[in-house]
Image (cartoon, rainbow, N blue to C red; front, side, top):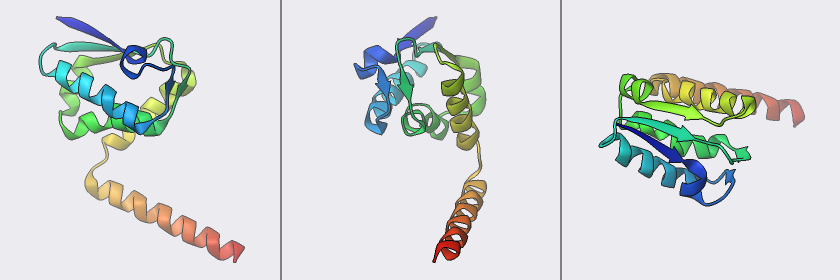
Length: 120
């Protein structure tokens, strides 16, 4: 059975920017993944999307479900090119191992520290 989740109906706004609203979408997707099978996530009508929203709505699913299950059962529609790129970045980050995430965090911290040294 296929199910469509219209993001705009879940968050009640055309702005998908709040992590809290992302949690709302996450909950709806998670509950439906357990019962519905294939799910289409519809972003039509959404004008603004942030990675903070996508991390909570979509990225956190990778903490609960396998990559294979999500790739087989989740489809996204209604994203423009920029928003699709943001989603792709969120998905790439969600698939990093904990060790890779720690390494990335250290690299970012070092880059920020080096940048501060250049300004101070």
